Length: 209
Length: 209
Image: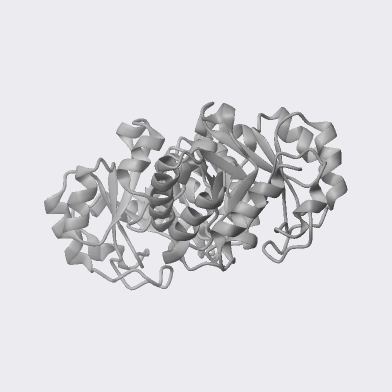
């Protein structure tokens, strides 16, 4: 699966925006609309509950041939047989993650600077999440790096890039021509009244990135 | 290492009782006094910080030939090459943990009932943590099962048992003759003015368990 990932509409979950009992339903609607990859992000949940949620979501994603990544936790990814993990600069180092996960799993890394992007590529990341592109309320600690950073990172690395941070169906067009491979969104789909329609609109507009 | 573990004085860390910068120092003093095993427990810390702390503690423990277990997180255990994990009933299932860790790592499991103890033994746990033996303020959610439960679990399973929950240098003698393999303590060492002396006293008294 690893060599043919479509990063164009990358959904990051947030159960702060969507009750846990609706998570699978929202993810399924997003996939119906065109979401190409899902990252399950959880904080303040027991490992057992995280694992069970990941296992249920993996089943859905496998049925629909959409890769599932787990935020931060390589143990949950392995336990639920997810397709990989996404790690930030405050998670375990990339080389440790690779040692744990092996070569078949995807490791994506958050990068806010060209230096972080180059380091992540060198360490074997499969893709980069670069942001925050626009101001966002989802992650308080994410510095707004702007669209220009997407271009700089695009010039610096060869691996796929997804922009993240405040991207929605309205402002995605401002990323046209940046050469990135996709957009990672949270609220645009998780908090949408019609997650399927939101995903479909992103999918259509992502063609011009 | 797995086949010759001494469980007699099992230290569970708590950085709520001991500032992180003192953690290694307290653990070293505890080992000097006679602690035979350390479990690193962390909550509300980034995975990177958890990993770095685990790696530093692993170095100390390896130098002193004391096994290091990680609470809950198999990914941190693998990344820091710890000797295993300790999991509770709200962590990932034992079989998933074994799949991730392989046969060479130790998996310990918390059990509060004979049923949980039998299930854990059947699932391949190397040892059990049974408690809370005495009332404890360390874990709000730990039900006080009493000394009698130690005897019941001792009769029911063959794997090593450590009692946990409110055990200290004073009340450990109440566990004499229960046939358990050791005592797991938190505050008795972590909050002690003299961690080495506390560990030494537990070590001496643990001979009568």
